[in-house]
Length: 144
Image (cartoon, rainbow, N blue to C red; front, side, top):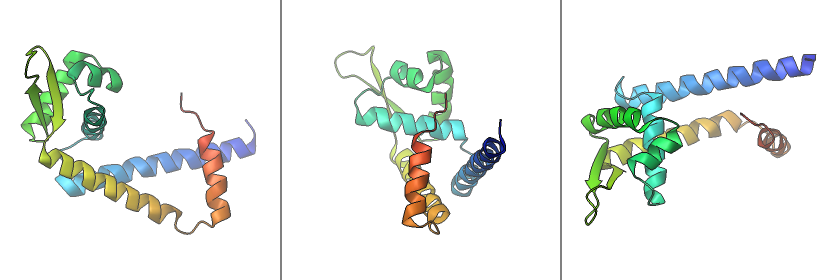
C-alpha cells in the first residue's frame, strides 16, 4: 500500500466514524436512548418496502440479511415503541404486512432531514469542481 492509499484509508475511516457518531447523536437527540442504528435501519427498510408493496416480514428480513425469527424479535421491540404496526391481509390471513405508524414515519422523516442537513453542512465549502471530483471518486468505491 502506498502513502496515498494510507491517507485515503485514514480519511475514509475517519469520515465513517464521524458519520456513525453523528447518526447516533441525531437519534439520541430525537429519542433519547430509545432507538438504535439497527432499529432505525429496520424502519428505513420497512418504509421502502411499503412503497413497493413488498412489506411482509419475510421480505423485510431478507433485505436486512437476518432470519425471520430475529426480525420478529426486532419487530416486537419496534411495535412496543409505537413505531411499527402489523396488519393482516384482508383475504389471506397468513399474510401480514408491516408498516410504520404515524410516529414511526415522523421519526424517520425527521432523521432523514437531519441527515440531509448534516451532509449539506459537510460539503458547503466545496467548490463545484471539488464536488464533481468527490462524486466521481465516491461513485467508484465499492463496499463488498
